[in-house]
Length: 262
Ligand code: CO8
Image 1 (cartoon, rainbow, N blue to C red):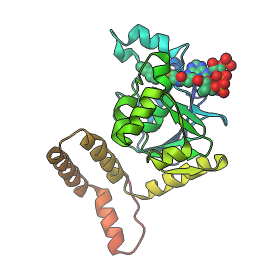
Image 2: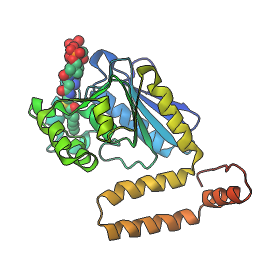
Image 3: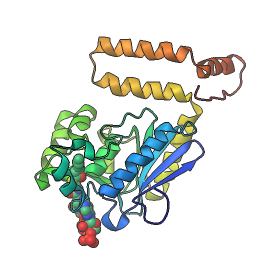
Image 4: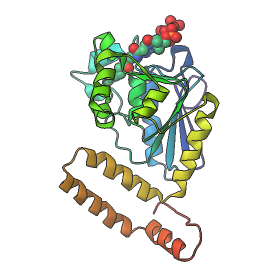
C-alpha cells in the first residue's frame, strides 16, 4: 500500500483517508494486486479510530477506474468464483462491512467494477468529463461487485436496465439527472470538492454518521417495521455515547462540539 509499486495508494490526512487506484497505464483497472491492496487499506481505514471519512479516486486525468482488469482479474475470478469465492478479497463493494462514509471523487471514466466502486460509495462527486457505465454484458458477463443489486435500488428501473443491458455509458450530467452523483464539477475541482464534503461530514458526530449509514444500508434490505426497530436500536445506542452528550451540551452552551467518536 505504501512505496513505489503500489496499485492502491493509501494516505491519511487528519481524519480523512484517501484511496487512489494507481494503475493509470491500464486506466486504473483492478488487478489482483489492486483488489488485495484495496482490501488491506479498507480494513485499516475501518479499524483506525483517527479516520472518519474516506475518499476514493483514480490516478491520472483519464480514468477513475475502467473496471476489473480483463487480462488479470477476470481469469482469477473464473478460477475462484465457484469453489473459492472468498479468494477474491472483500471490499466495500462486497463482503466488508464498513460504516464510515466513503466519497467517490470520480475524476474520469468509471466502467464496470469502477462504476460499482462508485455505487458502493455514499457521496459521489463527478468530473464533467466522467462517464459511467456497466459494459460487462459486452464481455458475456454481468457486474460482479454489486452493480446488478445496487443500481436498481438507486436509479429508476428503466435506467438501470439501460445501463445493465446495453453496456453503454452515460455522461456525468446524465448521472446527475438520474441521481447517481451529488455534483458535477470541472476536472480540477473534483478532489477539492470531495475534500469539502469530507470536511463537512467530519464536523458531525462520527458515531452518528456511522449509525446513519448503517441504518441506510441495512434498512434498504429490510421491511419497514424491521428498519424502524433497527433505527430505534441505533438511536438507543447513540443516546448513551459521549458524542451525544457533547453535541447536545455544545448546543446548549452555544459552542462548537468536539467529538471523540466515543
Ligand atoms: N482491463 C485491463 N486493461 C484495461 C482495461 C481493463 N478493464 N481497461 C483499459 N485497459 C488498458 C488497455 O488494455 C490499454 O492497455 P495497453 O495500452 O497495454 O493496450 C490501456 O488500458 C488504455 O486503454 P485503451 O487503449 O483501450 O483506451 P481507450 O481510450 O481507447 O478506451 C475504454 C478506453 C473505452 C475505457 C477501453 O479501455 C475499454 O473498453 N476498457 C474496458 C472497460 C470494461 O469493459 N470494463 C469492465 C471490465 S469487467 C468488470 O469490471 C467486472 C467487475 C466484476 C468482477 C467481479 C470479480 C469477482
